[in-house]
Length: 150
Picture: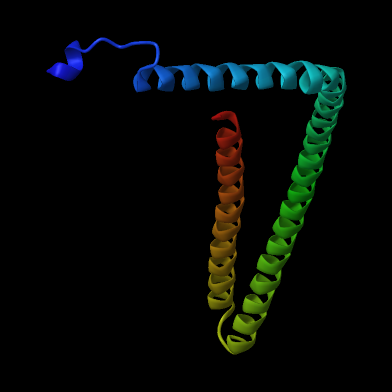
């Protein structure tokens, strides 16, 4: 307990440590003020003008990004329309090939069997086409719903 009750004089090692700490703190504060007035303040006007230029560039980039996004959406819509057309043509071609093949195999059978086979093939492909079209409409509705969510 002697250490706690001992009086600290001006020349005590603990007091000298405090003096050194205060001196270093004042020196650091002086260096920081010198940096502030000799480095930061002269560059402030240049930094503010560059910040304005950067902001204008960011605004331009955002506008260009919106345009690119719209062009990309249009391209995807055109691609979807082309794929829908190809899919419709493929279904029609497949139906024609199937009807032709069936009629060639059934050429010696009565007309009512040929008619029944043709109607059943027509019904199957009509349902397939309806399924494909409703699937595209459903996908478009889901995509539109997802765009509204954020």
